[in-house]
Structures are given as C-alpha cells and as structure tokens.
Image 1 (tube, helix red, strand yellow):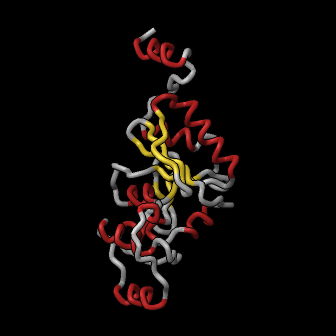
Image 2 (spheres, rainbow, N blue to C red):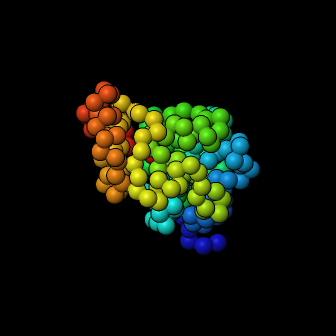
Image 3 (cartoon, helix red, strand yellow):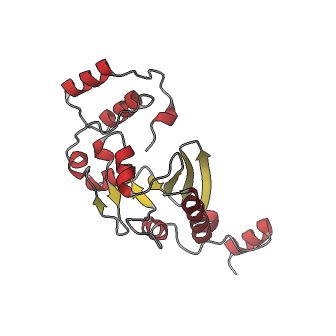
Length: 201
C-alpha cells in the first residue's frame, strides 16, 4: 500500500475513490465515449473541436452535450468512478457542471438536452463552433472550414450573449464581415451588460 492509499483510508475510511485511470486527455475522452454513438450521444463539441481544427492542443474546456438528464447523471457517475479523487468540482451554473480532472476542465452541459448532434450544432451561435470531436481526437462537423479560416459567421442570434461572445472570438483572431456585423447590430436588441456566464462554450 502506498502513501496515497494510506491517506485515502485515513481521510475517508476506504480506497473506493482511488482513480482507476490516469487523468490524461486520451483517457478522459475514452471514458466519455464508452457506450456512446454519434446518433445517441453524449457528444464532445464546441471549443475543443474548433481548437483541434486549428491544430491546437491546449484546450480550454472539454464540453459534453447530452440527450437527457439520465445521460448527464450517468456521465458524472462514470467519470467519478474512473477518475476518483483526481476529479473535483470547480463550479456550477445553470449552463453546466464544471469539473477539473487532472489538468483538464470538463464541462457537463445541462442548460438543454439535445436529440442529436445536429441539434447541438443548430444551437451554437457561431458556425466556427459547429465542430465535434470523436474518440480518437479527430475534429469533424459543418464548422470545420470556418474554424480553420478564422471566419466568424452567425448561426443563431443570442440576444443575451452576442456581444460578449463576439468579443471573445475577435480576441481569438476571428473576423466577421463588417456589413454582416452592422446588420446584426441594427436589427437586433442587444444585452450591453457583460456577464461572464454569457461566454458559454
């Protein structure tokens, strides 16, 4: 028995929370996709897919999207079982439960349930976010080219979040056609109060 196991017994009375897997990116993704299909979910999509499309490997978050509450709860139990005390909750919001697993932030999105990956894509505000990640860390989806080419195009207007999200992606180097931006500003009601919760995925 090593010192970690002794400490676990001392602090909790057991070793049941001992990690079964190292909290590497590959292991986390494999656990997420255990018994998952592209049709049934859950799905990793959004920022991580966009970053993979760009060839980046220092991901801000691993965002997981679900078809229903049961799948969401099963994912938490599966991750907790496999990664034990190397997983802890960072924060919770109406949007997601965010956990730290090793060196990675894992967000279990709960603001809405989705019947398909296409429904997840349809709910993203910008097309460059319409990128999913499969179990071998390959990116795919309708937003691949816009993600690679730093193109910022509106997919779905979100009155509450548009300006904050726009600023976020401009900060990443993305650019929107000026005429399209002016048309959005002139024809929609905006939320001008910055709120960190609007940054989302």
